[in-house]
Amino acid sequence: MFEFALAGLRSGIRGRSFQAVFFLGLGLIGIAYLSGYFSPRQPRTVALDVGLSGFRFSLVLLNLFWVQELVAREIDRRTVLFSLAYPIPRGAFLLGRFLAVLVLSLLAAVIMGLLLGIAVVFAGGQYVQEFPISVGLSYWTVLAGLWLDATVVAAFTMCMASLATVSFLPLVLGAAFAIGGKALGAALDYIGRGADGDTELVSRFSPLLDAARWVLPDLSRLDWREWPMYGPMPKLELIGYSSIMALAYIGLMLAVAVVQFSRREFA
Image 1 (tube, rainbow, N blue to C red):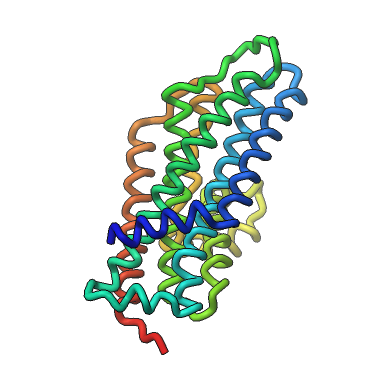
Image 2: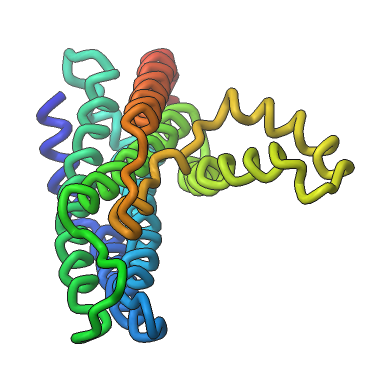
C-alpha cells in the first residue's frame, strides 16, 4: 500500500493539474489580500472570509484532480493492470492512492494556510480594526475543518472512480457532490425556517431535502470561520459531531470503493 502511496505522491507533485490549481490558489490568496482594501472598517475580516472561500475551492479542486489522475485515469488507460499484477489485495492500490491524496492535500493546505495567514495580517495596511481577527489556534482549526471537508469530497470521488467506466465521470460527480454538500445545510435551514412564508416552496422541496440529508453529508458544518473572524468559539459538541460525521462518511466511501474495486472486471 505504501509503495502505491509513494508513487502517487510523486505523480501528484509532478502533475500539471497540481501546478495549475496550486497557482490558482495562490492567485485567490492574492485576491483575498486585495479585497481587504475594499472594506473601510474590517479589511482583515473581509480578506480572511474571501481567503477561506478560495482556500476551500482550491483544496477541493486539487483533490478532485488528484483522484482523477491517480485512479480514474489509470483505470481508463488500463495502466492500473500493472499495479494489480502484484500478489497483493486490490484494495491496497486504492487505499495507497487515497493516502497519497491525503498527504498531498495536507501539504497544500499547510502551504496555502501559511500564505493566507500572512496575506490577512498585512491586509488593510496600518489600519487597526475594532474587532481583530485571529490567525492562531482558531484559524488553524478552521483550516483543519476545510481540509476534512475536501477529504470527504476526495473519498466520494474515489468511490465513484472505482465504479465509473467513463474517465471524466468521477470528476463531474465529485464537483457536484462538493457543491451539494456545501449547500445542503443552508437549504435545510432556509426551508426549516419556513422559506420566508413560501408554503409552496416548503411543500415542494422539504421531502427532497429530507431524503438528501440521509445521502449527502452536510459539509457546511465543517466551516467554523466565525471563530477567527469574530471571536465566539463554536461549541465543542458541534466540532466533534461534524468531525465524526465526516470521518464516518470517509470510512463508508472507502469501504464501498474497496469492495467494488475488488469485484471489478477489467476487459
